[in-house]
Length: 348
Image (tube, rainbow, N blue to C red; front, side, top):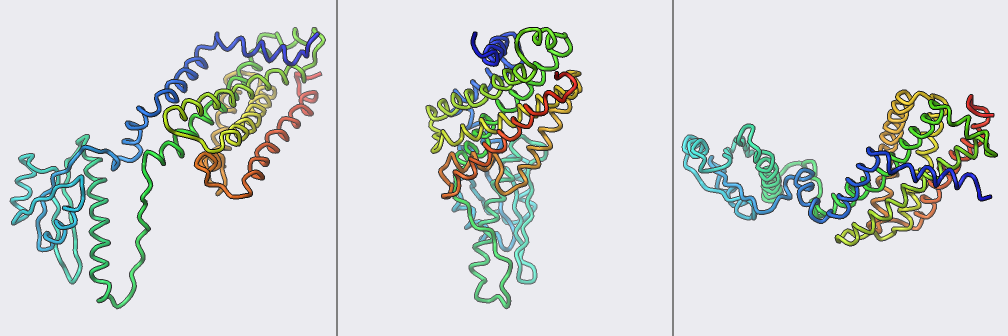
């Protein structure tokens, strides 16, 4: 006779085909990973509207500092500026739809004040605002450089320019963590459903009639759910690599996913055994995962940051210790559950 825990694990995986919600979630993830090179273009436009290419903003520039501002706008590939003699004529052109925005640049007491007028409630407004923000940021840098010799005190420094591609940043800080951690959360939810259904239907007691213990039953369910997450993540990483988003340390990333899957699945199993009502258990699991994961993102070294840094090869010599820490945390939680199962109400 084989290991009963493996038999239970295979039984759990076989029943996944009947769970329409889980199958749908898997198909959605598969679609995102398989067509990431196409989807990322549209998603990045939401993540960073300033990255949208092929959209040129026509701007009316007026005011006594308009010529200086216009010189800065002319250097921007996505903005075309036109000088207007007065604010009245500039706003009239805006009202007629000849320009997308109006910039009024006036000098007052040795300073330049710029006011902007953009469409109200237009779909294009977000893109226009982001492009104008970047242009005015460049104008501020130019003005500071020109006036640096005449300043009596050093102003606060501007933040450094970022030359990183928004597509690169989105792929590794949003898309990859999403595809790695979503299977983890689904696995935990699957464990909650599986154990609470066993208790509600009374099949957990029937399983105990067989030569298996409650610990064996829990082991089989935890193994199946925890093993499913890294398997999915491996497929998603392979599809991302096929679409041009390569991961430099795929094994380390999968180890982190497996460790977190074991931790989250253990949390789900614990909640299901302590609160066998399905709705209550799912609510407690969802709140617990949100609080734990949300709190972890506040740490300087968190799961999202770790996966992103491993993927782009931005890690130091201590990163194996970090990966080992995730493994130790997951294993410790799992061993704690195994020791606690006999003392829980459904145990022996």
